Length: 473
Image 1 (tube, rainbow, N blue to C red):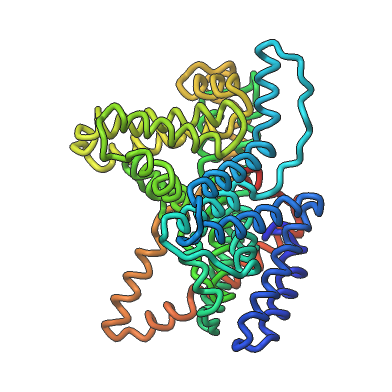
Image 2: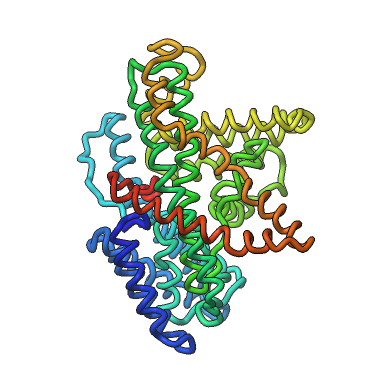
């Protein structure tokens, strides 16, 4: 069930709000139970046969964490076993088909199994590993309530696409949070903005990207760049839109979920981009892979190996295909280069040139990410740099520019921190005594969110439903 579906907006969401807030705030256990039941129902909606995988992960990691308490014996063996089981489950569901296919390419004659991928398995598995690691390190105590651990792993606003949570941040809110009307209004506003990102921008831009990537021999230089830019914007609005909706819903229920994006397309290097894009995943790899491997506290050669390992894993985390491996290696090389080769020279360039440098490299990276095969990667990238079968330009590119001109025009300021700039200006005027600025700050975002909600519902009623891109991961 996607947040942008009519079933969720006008069925599931009103039901969970009614049931949750019907229970008095002092009955914290009751509200948690409602959220847990609805979270499991939300997950089961996508396929009841996949629910046991999530429940097995919840129960297994809850039990393992109890065995990792400081007074328990053989803690290291328990931790390594639990880690292996988590990675084994992720590997079985996500990578078995990929492994068998590649073995067959080497000469084996194995039957490629058809294994249904549990939605969000990459996200809840990483949350489980973070929880176990924090307990093992002594950062947090093990949670004795199975219900709380299950709600942490299955919390429906962020279950399918993150942001990736840490129990040390989420656990205390299960008992100490306070739901307020102000938080509910702010959360609802952010949800509406996220829904508009997905429905009004991402879905439209996706049509341009799909047309370009499927052009084949009709591909031109202009169409290749248009499709690559459209996908670059589509992925951002699709994923950050989901994150906005997740954070907004979390705030309605009294939870402060972590931010996942910080205007990544204003970055001036690949390194800065990854400090702004999917931040909870970057922090996860930093804290649970890169630093344990030695991080920067080792020789240059070891640092290179550490970066290579992290980015190989980052690529594989996103999908079981060679284009994702290539995408991970691409960023490994970029980050190594910026760290050890051309980083100082890059810092001396004008800001505008650094920004262009980053955007071009980011866009090429998303072509690797989006392509269905390594062959398509080669065709798209070569077309972008002048070797296109259809020449420089075509009527198809003109058609997409005209058909989706408003979405393309609106996407650029929407991807920039224009909101922050306007808010700062209005805040400064409010402090100077402007009543207009005060009213605009108080009511403007909510009025705009309400208008965007109406536009989004109209678009949903008049178009074909499109799932979120990161559901496949």
